[in-house]
Length: 186
Image 1 (cartoon, rainbow, N blue to C red):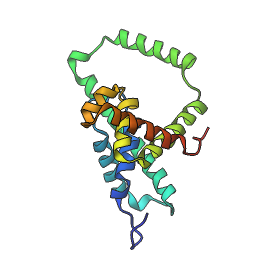
Image 2: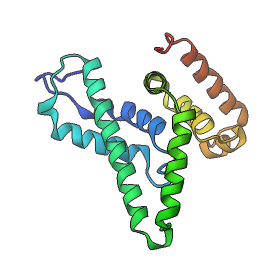
Image 3: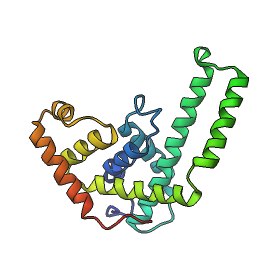
């Protein structure tokens, strides 16, 4: 939503971007980077590049912000991988790296998703993160802890300072709200 003078308020997209970042954050970075920090970085980039936005609707603004978030995440992964390469304790021999890289490339060619499947998965993740952003904070947090981080209900209850029955209710209501959304694309 634009503010009165036609500009936009980055604050209104903070929770939405944080939810997207939590879904899309690479597993290698999850323990090192907080989704809130990623969302903040993406918003800072967006504010700095706001003159490049050519859309008019909130949906176009969200698509633009998603692309900035994707770029921010890609940069974080590159920085993380570069820092690992500089760590002498983590270096591998060149021959081993080439062999593993070749094996992984071959596996991806045989087992990896097609480009269409990758696009469909990305669209489903966007659909899911938008649905999560629409949930009340406690339901969203319970679902993220359970299904994105794999925590058992008892541990979530301790983490959220709630009873297991209360967490089960949050999960049930949150999942029901997600199921009531229109089907994801694809």
